[in-house]
Image (cartoon, rainbow, N blue to C red; front, side):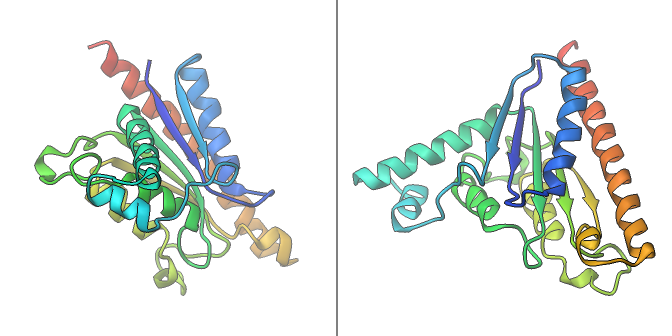
Length: 219
């Protein structure tokens, strides 16, 4: 059975990114009932940001109790990544970039020689499917006036796709704050349409990834 690692990072009680992840998970469960899912909610159980002890643990042999505790957490995060056949991340744009909770998870789990390859040709994660579900409050898509202000999607494409080598698909819902801030029917329809399309894309992606991994396991 394929193993899914699911990371949630939104703090909002009205989270669109979490609702997209729920659509993905529903379709995944339909394809693989009873399959293993490791879920990390970075709001309910935040990962500490890098400090001097965790930095030492990343770079050298830990010597103090605090450094050994940091190394143990890093090893746990690395083991979860390495064990997962597929990765799912839900993320809202916060102040034009990723939430600090997601950045902390990445900082603590990207380790040279383990998840980060010394040699890109021998990348242990290359080719594994990763799905990123992003909620944008406004419109940052191709051709939009604010396109260059998006430091969320491009950053994750760099880290997950270019550096780690995942087979990456990014699915976005835009205009997510319109229902709270606007009475303009045009803006509200844009938000509703984008949300419907994102839910459908998340469902389709889950079915495709689950189907591909299921077929691969039978070969």
